[in-house]
Length: 269
Length: 202
Image 1 (cartoon, chains in turn blue, red):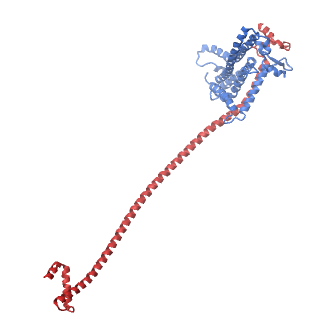
Image 2 (image 1 turned 60 degrees about the vertical axis):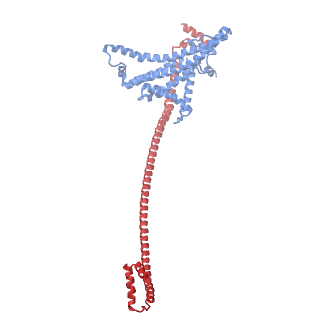
Image 3 (image 1 turned 45 degrees about the vertical axis):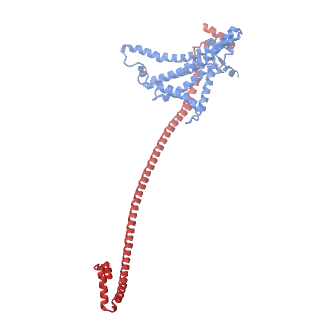
């Protein structure tokens, strides 16, 4: 019961301090038995998001019909978006079907976890804990390198393919060095940090406006109370804006993952 | 340093229930390993579910939809072709019927003309036959009347002549010869009635 209660937003407990700090995102629930580790609230949210998605997808596609039901139609819109708008556009119609399940799973998984940032009573974007973006990025990282090595026929050929053809000899080492940094460091780093940073900062911003408004209101000083109202209005507007960003980040993450896979499968660099 | 201070200050009520380095976990850029691993497991389960339960169903529905649309189009095309064939057949039949009707009409016209011609011929033949019969009858009657008249006229004229001459010529052999000769002359036109009349008046 206590664990369920802890899944609710921490904002009530957070009343004791303002402004919000990065530490607010550290929300342990209970110790994992036999270890020094904690089961955290974002982990619970992640599990809820996963189960929700699975139940929804199971209900709407279990009896997928030629003439779709409303639920199936909705799922198909998201599926088409990931399948045609991301996978096929980025990878090309020859190979994309293999990666559709991966990209569709990636997109919906990140999207719902992001949207948890504005959906009561969760109101905490899971991806604001960097462990999750790193995990997803690691999968993308392994997948696109693996696909590339397999497609090019070996590690050496893969690394060689990173180099654009037709370069003068003396510049090749520099370009190869830059390409290696891009492929092995920049790409995964930016992929993980972009998602994490957007969710983290967006949540901080919302907390500042909404909890900050509450703090000003609580003083019962007319001047501050008058400022609290616009703060809340702005907080509401920012919540809508944040919803857009949460969608966009899920899209960007999946799009880049598809683009990396598509690049690894491309015959010409 | 400062981050750690803030973080430990933030941990508030849960401070006492937080025996291990909370400050370290509060640094947002460092992954908390249980979260990372838990995220991988959850995504792994979700990916397995999507790849085995969701996508195949959706793709099957898509394929069926494509097949249904293509099948529908094929059926429509077939129906159209059938309709066109039926239309052509009807038109052919109609043209045949028209030609047949025209042929029949032509035939009827010909037949009618033939019948009329035949009837006309028959009627003419009949008319000719009737008029011929009538002519013959008239001729016979005339002959009979002529013979009778000749006899009577002879009788009367003989009587008259007897009375005039005062002597009976009835049993005279030449009596018949005279009358006949007179009548033949009369018929041949050698003796005009006017002359006779004139002679009688004389």
